[in-house]
Image (cartoon, rainbow, N blue to C red):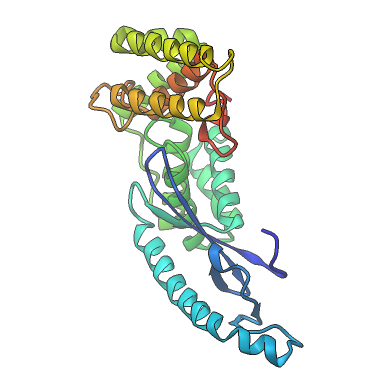
Length: 294
């Protein structure tokens, strides 16, 4: 996060749950969180300042208008923190207050959930890591639910349950049998190669076959109109076509009711397979950049 000296750890993320998400990030300096669009206003000793040390009078005068923006930023901080606090105990939080330490604790919980089989030992490790503070444990649990597919991934689900138990002082909730069966089914599906995984989905949703043929055909026609290569506009249009068409067929925003067909895992793997088949170029900031199988 360049351009701001002495930045302390602090980061609120309010992120849309849709696949086309927009990020709003704030960073803090000495405890004051500044929105990303206002990072240039200096902060000293925990107070929003309208001028830096040693500023000339003219510079101070120019910054008068920015002071009002800074005060608005502090008010916005309070609203965002209140939002994150309100969302903290929800099963699907829409916002989280995440410092690097909270993210580190959440990552550690994933490792513990995978490697430490005994619940009591796992909870003890988490409490030691959090130095006995329940607040960070609860926020780390919210971060796991916010950033992971806890309804599809058994490890992420257990990490969430362990953190909630460590943060509340209660026993670890046992995993429901139907949840365990869903985790196992999705994990088995995700272990397949992309063509096999897509074929398995098409067996349950035959429209995926014609959608694949239509997308690949459209990509070939478009490339043929441009000397064999897709233009940036054509590529973007085809990515939109892929997203909109696939969203209607499978994934969390579809009308499917089957646990696998409605899963984000199925959507991600089908989407990545179609991108490869159609020869599309991925955008630099696109969520398609990362192979969901890695």
